Length: 116
Image (cartoon, rainbow, N blue to C red; front, side, top):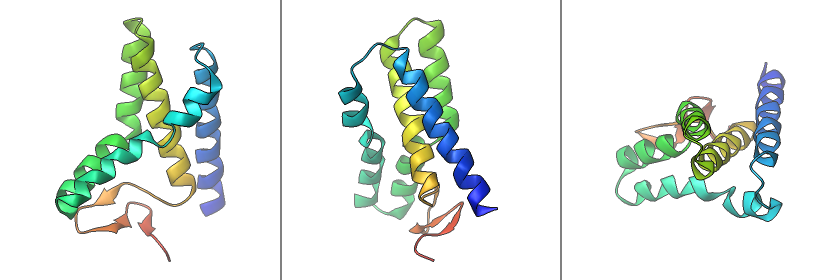
């Protein structure tokens, strides 16, 4: 099952790269912004509850899809870019085993414990 989920996440990461090509931005911008959603980890400087909330906002695929679609329908390429980056980054994180966080600990994710 783990391999199947990893292949699914890899496919979603490739989908984000594919969608990015339609925006007309240079490739280096995708690479430069790819880790930007990790800014959500700054909430952990406050405490684990705030950290989990901010991390999950920046790594939620539903929010990423809504941003992309809103940008598409409103003809706002920056919104599309934001959604694509969030979606691709979240897929990459989940491919590596980093899921959405529970408020008790950074290592407690919807995919299980990190490091086991």
